[in-house]
Length: 120
Image 1 (cartoon, helix red, strand yellow):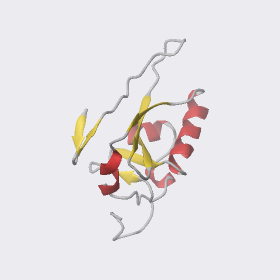
Image 2: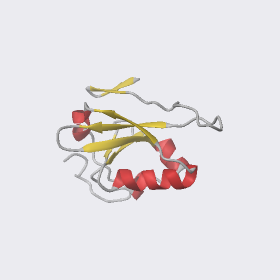
Image 3: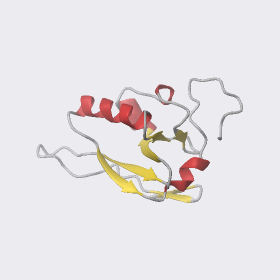
């Protein structure tokens, strides 16, 4: 675990093992009273053949740029679909209900020229 701004982030990269003995990655889904975001490390996006530019500005980026918080309506399902196709199984997801900090993170503007759109 490490601190990101005022929120505590719990990365659970090592999850349970499948029947075949391979390690299943676990992703954290953060919610606040109005919305939700799936936290995905940039390296996991790369493994899936994706980058921040594949997602909308409705998603947010950690201060160090290492984690994308994929919004629940379009971006998270897109990643989860690619993850399932690549790994042949659903991603393991744990829920956290302390996601208010995500709204304060910069919006994802990768691949777009929005010079003043870092925070909504």
